Image 1 (cartoon, helix red, strand yellow):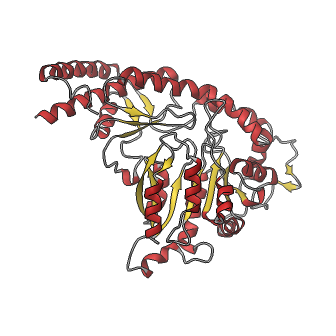
Image 2 (cartoon, helix red, strand yellow):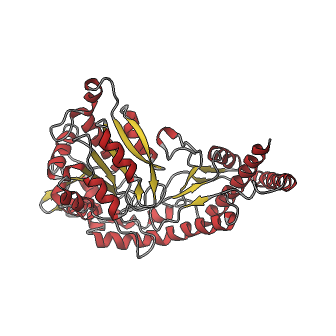
Image 3 (cartoon, helix red, strand yellow):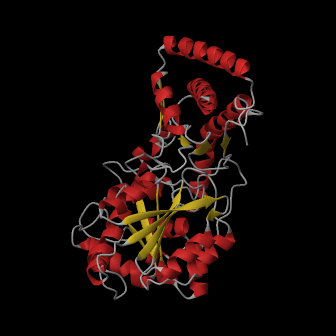
Length: 434
């Protein structure tokens, strides 16, 4: 679809550029300093968990189902926390480990386990190149997707292969084609509910195809980062099929390794991280991690389960988060409609949960828009970050993170984004005629 600027006469386009540049100069003079770069909870959201800090005090009982949380031991996590982890991820408590605050670090260490030691009796991934004429190990990366996932595999020298995201999840025709033909493809990154950054949730069909598809690699793994499994903006949120139930039905439960944490539920950076897998694979992960960990912070686990004893308590707590997040997401949608309806300059997602909105401008615009926004005092996630290696092939995608700024600041930042996209769109239209 053409933008409104491409449809203008030369005189109309020149007048539009003059007007847009004048508005840019006005905004620049205001000296704004606004940040929409990362998906951090707002201070108001963090404050709703403060009462958790009063639940474990000097005179508190420091045991959980007979486990002394004040001493060494119980590597797997305290019983109440493992039960809660199972409710998050849809497995029995025995199929979970409750560890430190970062699910991303658990993901990193689990990929490293497969790289260094292999899984389910298969050779370490690191040995694949030597046995296959230097061919690199590869990972599928639904794109746009989560940059930190891509960074984990890139750090190990694994080749990240982008596959298109759709409203139902990754393009499964392309995923199935690739994994059936190449034994070097060892895994896929997935954020299955309210995906980062699109906010889309995988359909039941996508989940079933992922767990049942034939793969050339016998040790292919689905890294299922269910970070936003309880992050609904509305009472009726998206429903995600239980991936472990689907995998058991397909007879390939070892394929799935799932993760979640409370980092955007309680305190960012001071939450509790979970991992779940089949009985065989969770035993492998535990064996690998025990080499460097006696036990995680059980006092933090105890605080969390006394504050959030079950998934019903978690959902009630998340309704409080939604009261802060919902107006911000609705502000994004309203501002983008107000700024772009009828212009052909942009498309965006309208998720019902999670932390991000995926925005696409004209081809060749995202880097220029990001640079212009910086000049105007608004920091965005770097253009291209949602693709492996930061290489968005069409240079269109920008991840909008509306959670941290106040609604007032968010509204001002979105006005800047709209102005920047319009100016860059007009400039691109002008360059096409040069």
